[in-house]
Image (cartoon, rainbow, N blue to C red; front, side, top):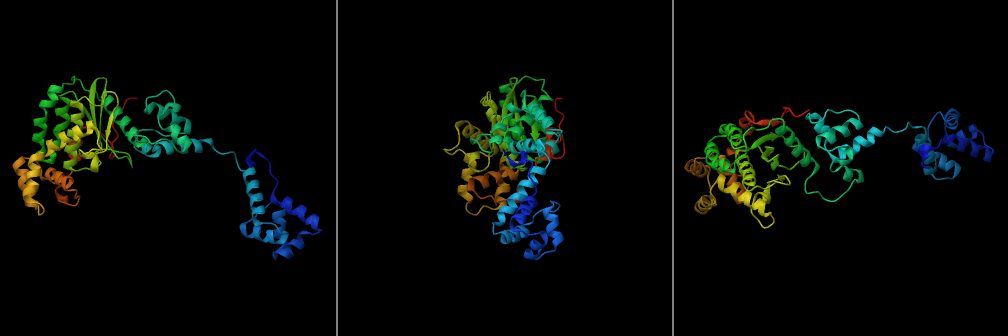
Length: 374
């Protein structure tokens, strides 16, 4: 049985018994300790606890270890403490599994006591009860097998689902229309403000798209999944750059055209090698990356440009190639940075796109809470 369930006497009881065994009175102990008699009386009567310094002095006086008195005091304190608030442990478990506080701040959850939060999480993840919420079992163990999808990524994915479910498209999906729309999308790459047309063009193909700000620590650029037979693209815009936007968008479009993610959503973190075609990248990702790279800047033309201009590629060179390809120079800059593995090049050309597309897209985050199903 733990000390929390036992009515422990104050440490002063032991001191009183020891005084009696030695034939001392409290004044004698006060003399030995070099303190006022009142100080000893307060400890013996249980009105004052034993400090670390006093534990050391008592240990010397009675020839026992100071830890003995500290343990007595700790056991007594625990026995008198109020029963712990079970909400604390339950909220800790929830926060360990998911960034609950941030989800409340973002309006994904409304907060409340632990029971209310558990019910909200179950509803958020579309399960019947808290025990079925993914990752909670690992949080309870404080360790578990490595997950392909992190809790923060999974929460973000479900938020994308909620946003698009509240704003369904009325046009059936057409792969033919989506493929033919690629030229129209490419024509928008000359200026960042043209990205505002992307949601409409995709909607005309039967594709739902939403921008949802990533949760802190969630390494995620985009997602592709199917909802009731309709493809969905979610984007985080965590790197708000024109090159990243178009690469991620075309990457997710390729997943849709190839009917990837029909059974399991594909969550993409396209930083570094994950955005390439190396041997460590899955076949699906290799195909999507290759399509995205070719869409942004023809690989043949980019390689030829590098062969002619490297190692001294000037900003004027980048502007010239962008003009020739009728795309924004930031897109050329982005592909060069990746190809040359030099992330310091042409930084000022990497303009933002999110403000333009956010004006016409379904958006959740950046101070805005998207309407979702009740």
